[in-house]
Amino acid sequence: MMEDYDRSRLQKVILLLLLVMAVVFGILTGYFQSKPGAPYERTLLYPSQEGDTTTYTGKAHGQTVSIACRPDGTSVDVDLTVDGELVHVCRVEYPEGTVTDEDGDTWPRVEILRDGEALFRGGYNPNSHSLFEEDGSWHSGVVIYAGTELPEPDFDEFDILRFARGPALSRRGSWAAWAMAALLLSGITALGVAFPMTMFRLNHFLSVKDPEPTEFYLSMQRLSWVVLTAFIFGFYLWSLTIID
Image 1 (cartoon, rainbow, N blue to C red):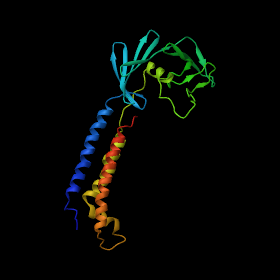
Image 2 (cartoon, helix red, strand yellow; image 1 turned 90 degrees about the horizontal axis):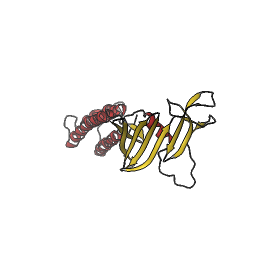
Image 3 (tube, rainbow, N blue to C red; image 1 turned 120 degrees about the vertical axis):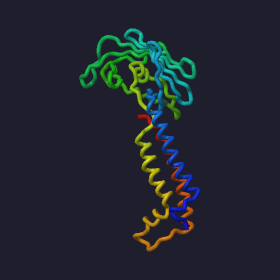
Image 4 (cartoon, rainbow, N blue to C red; image 1 turned 30 degrees about the vertical axis):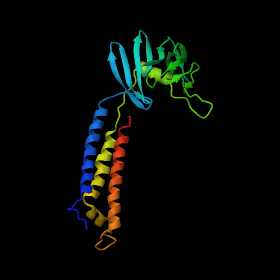
């Protein structure tokens, strides 16, 4: 009968894996947390500065995306490049005057152009980058498409304005998710792996006198260690996709 002090090779390997995963994913989380970027298409574009131009670069949908923002007096030029090819040439201008919304609040005017065509004219909230039509109604930007397939996401008026005004930066990874995986999930799993007989007897001492596990129970217990370790690994990977 397996005892807690007589650990098998499987137990040692799993305990080592749990420790290594906690350390490695802790380092990865710290690395990603140290690199703030601008959210775009469910990923982050990382800023770099060259003169007056700020360029946000990263991978989106498997392609290298760059968004270059150059101030030009009171206006800002915003260019979108995908895999080295210039896709959109945009410009944000701030005409004089204001737009009054339906609540009576006034907002400065903005004009957003893409490839030489006016994409939006109206008011904008400098804090939230929300847009208002000339009549004061809120501009949702929602477009209804016919057919069953939606077109690929485009560089819309909200993206252009957000990058022109300087997007709020976010970070990838979550210390809370790492702590849950490293301390809670890994800790509980490690206790079961390191002290299987103790945990078994604690679970059954109130209902069975001198309980002893069957071979089938021990086999399923070993299988559960492997499954839980794989689940924790997947949880770590998922935690690195979180953008906050």
